[in-house]
Length: 224
Figure (spheres, rainbow, N blue to C red):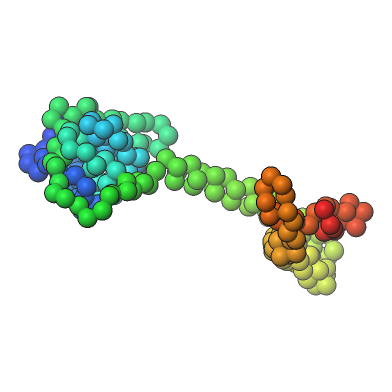
């Protein structure tokens, strides 16, 4: 299909067949307006049953037709959306001549609609990962600066330098160790669970109670 002046046209291949899975590919060509877009996605809607795909990223000028919009014969609409970062968005017109989904022959089993990848969710997850990375980098940067200040303050004493580096390494190792320690406690609590009879629920697991001792800064496991 082609996009010219944000209008979708296609000269042939206007039919797909229902119940296909990863068997059809939509190839897209567009005018120069779309060349400036940083991201381009396609959204498919089956007019017969209302089934809609998640935004599917177009890479290399093509994308797969998701199976969940090919369940019912009838008209299939496609919308193409282009993004220029967070500043601009362009959208194609509603198709004047939608694609057609033809009835398939008998299939061996009942098709379970696949879940198409949600590009927006991927972007949001990426943004959260970037925020976390930036926050961690700032913490490390401040700690590194503190170590540098300490080194300068000690007149480049080698023992002081090694001690500062060891302190930072020890902290990183300890924080990673704390995660595994908590996991060990949880598994140990599960392994040490007893089982009792309950009138309403039958046999139930009785887990150990865990609490933090603020004085010793330790996690204690005791009987419920």
